[in-house]
Image (cartoon, rainbow, N blue to C red; front, top):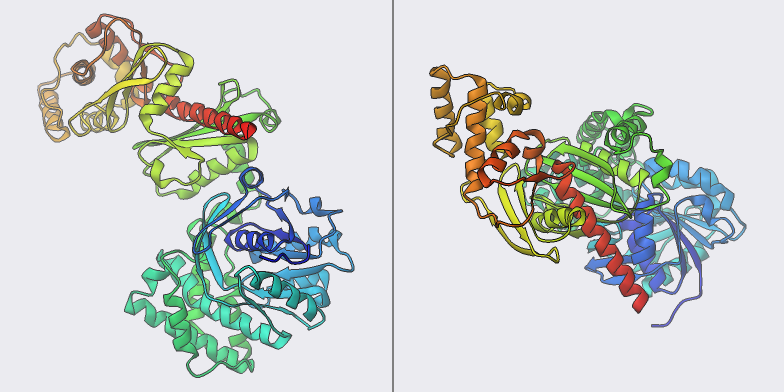
Length: 609
């Protein structure tokens, strides 16, 4: 393919739109510099490049990956693309003003009506181009975007026709690498911005409010009827603005939207994730212009206000400084060494392990020496997705994470780590890192019991799991304690005071609850009931295979909060079973160990090339 002239192009904002644009500009032979303020994401892009998958397949490496706009200074760009959300544009433009030169042309590659004015406010209309994007994608990892659709062409134009030549040059560059883009005049670009905004307004807030993908929304006759009415309102307002569409425009819009694919549009993703949305520049603008012409836009108004109301539920986003306070509290609670300064971890290599367990999600950050510097946990079944995002943001902000690993029941549904591994592998890695050599590992978790056998080289030789639902696990303990009205935090100390030596006859939670009720009716003390429950669990473990003659270690949340189990198991196995430090975080620590090993392996392979 013939390369174009070496244009110097900066891309600010690396969501799916910016990623696709950057890769295609690079493919066309431009010298492309990127700006991504998330340092972890920027490092990933710097090391692994940007990758496009699905409808477009391409990979590109970039020499210049900046984490602040000020780093563009001296780079002398020909073009600067703003591929940001409108909510972030004003601040970015203010910073970018220091980059202004005579030759610089700025481009608003954003959705919405009049978003280009945010860029023109800083650089002037004569230097500003507007680009209408007709492709979309989903980011599966920090540096990978799955391109979900492209309905060519894109459009680009100078907003006052002063830089039509520059618009034509970029259109030709992108078209040369298959991202068909058409240069148009200032009148046409306004029409195309209204056209795209009506399309976005018709489906984006509906998908966000209803938690529907585009495919789901366009497959239901009831929602399609709403979509059609929203489009008709937009057409009526555009007509009053003397922006005319053909008679079959509604039908064309519905056909376009039906090809959108099984993914969430950008605004819906922001709403679902409790981030500020661009609703003011989509449906909000249609409402604004409708009021100007005394046109009722009831559906656009309804969705505008619903999205705003739902966004305002996110207290963190509307209370100044609250996000920083949450970050601070999480860091203070999770730091293993409370005296350590935050800056201590920003310049050293760290590794993240996440154990998405059935009861709790555990986080562990480990330094290069294998020392756990941060531990945190959250309930796994909570509907508060923002809590998980807050912890991940805190980690990304305060630690120099070089590699990460996810494990546990939810690992396959978590795309924000570099690798995933089984709990067996992570448990073995954790204990082996601290206690190398042959060993048994007993892991009593929320939903299962595992016995892991490691050989002298720390490899998993075999493992065994309980065979009856959640019998004898953390969830079993919690439900039985609740039925007995025993404070689960006091069970271990109460059991140590008992001389009782009988166990529950049933491991089925339903039958065990009935048996507990009989114990209560018989007048048994809480101390005896607690010990009877523990004996049942210990006997369950004792029936599983535990190789003699080698050290045995216990991990998991159950042993962390119920240490009396260790006493009973020591008696049953006639040996000293050891509990490792922070047993509840053992598997997440092991995931961090494997993340470190993966990072070392990748570096070795790179150095050998």
